[in-house]
Structures are given as C-alpha cells and as structure tokens.
Amino acid sequence: MPPEYEFRGQEFAGILRPRIAKEGTVVTTRERNYGGGVIGALKKFEGGIESLLFNGRWLLVPFYLGLLLGLVVLVVKFVQEFIHLASIALDASLKDTTISLLELLDIVLLANLILIVIFSGYENFVSKIAVAQDAEDRPSWMGKVDFSGLKIKLIGSLVAISVIQLLAVFLEPDEMNTDHVFWMIIIHLTFVVSGVLFAVMDFIADKRAIIDIAAEKAALELQILEKEHGFEKGYAAKLDPTGQ
Image 1 (spheres, rainbow, N blue to C red):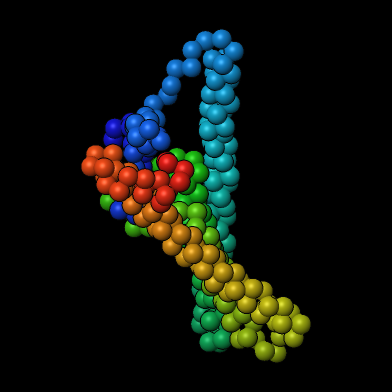
Image 2: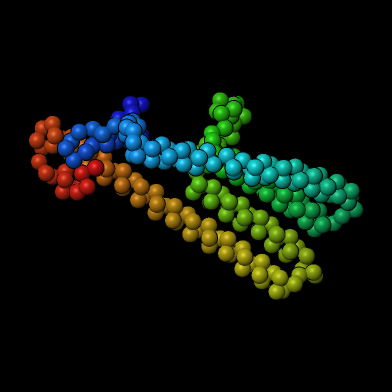
C-alpha cells in the first residue's frame, strides 16, 4: 500500500482515504525529517517514549501465560470431578448424576472462556499469532474477535455459567436457601442486562463508524471533483469545514 494513503475502517469495505490538505495537495504519512537542534532532539526523545510505550504491550504476556496455567488447573479439577462421577455412576440417582454433569459443563465453559480471552486478548493487545495464520486447525473465530466482541463473549459465558449454577441449585430444593437463591437470580439478571447494554452500545458505535466513513468518502470524492473538474467549487468545504 502506498505510504500516501492510510487505511480507514478495515471492516467497512476497505476505504482508502488520501489525506488532503486545504490547498488540495496530498500529505504523505512518511516520517518527516525535522532536522537537528532542539526540535530534532525533542522528536528523538518523543520517538523513544513512543517506542517504549508501544513495546510495553509485551508486559501483558505474563498475564496470558498465567491464564494458560490456569487451564492446567481446570484440567486437573475436571479429571477429579469426572473420576467422582464415574465412581458413583452405578449407584447415584439421576438428579445426582445431572448435578455432577452440570459441574463438568461449568468447568468446560470456564475453560472455553479463558481460551477466548487468551487468544483474543493476545491478538488485540500484543501481537498476531503468526504460527496460527495458515494452520489447518485454526479456530474460525480467531482473529475476528475484537475488543467489543470479546466483551460480548465474556458476558455471554458468564450468563451461561450463572444459569448452570442456578439449575444446579434448583435441582436440590431441600438444600435451597431462599436468600442465597434470590441473590443468585439478581446476579444472573445483572449479567443479562449488562450483556444487552454492551450489545446495544456496540451496535450504536458500529452504525456511527459506518456513517463517519461514508461521510469521509463522500467529502473526499467532492474534493477530488472540485479540484479536477471545478464541480460546485466550495461545496466540499461546506460539507467538510475542516478541509481534511
């Protein structure tokens, strides 16, 4: 891609938007040479700070490695629960078997959630996972879950886990504590409402982004027509007063 262009809105049809100054000249995004002296020194200092901040994203790696080790712990707990279920399979009632299976399902959902956070978080905030780019077993969602999608998947998994917890409690009515169940329902509804609000906010943000990109594209086309063909001179400036 030529350096004279910057990419805006990868998810919206790949619009290439030249950066045009008020005089109609193309402003490149190449790094400018600010020369020596105080200004040059300040720019070098600024570049060093920006490089430090950019590379600081690697400080997140230990967090994701810790989550990966957490998956190992979940595997151990899953094996323990499965061994317990297998040991009582012949003598346990259907209710007890169902509760044990719900506990296994709870662990599986939590493990899936951790894996999504690891992959999506690493690719969104640290670096692309190069070894998985052409892998045959690459998950279909990998590389497609941005920060907004990660929030939705996170809250969705929490809702599913809370439902399983509620179902396990309802299967044991004799041991049910009214206050405990009440707060579990409140927490579950809080997760549900939060998920709906997240989805609505993301929908509004996506619509706004589409409108902004369409407006930029229209203003750019008018500027090009005005410059090359004298089409309604000054109309583009009225549409985009900033002249950008």
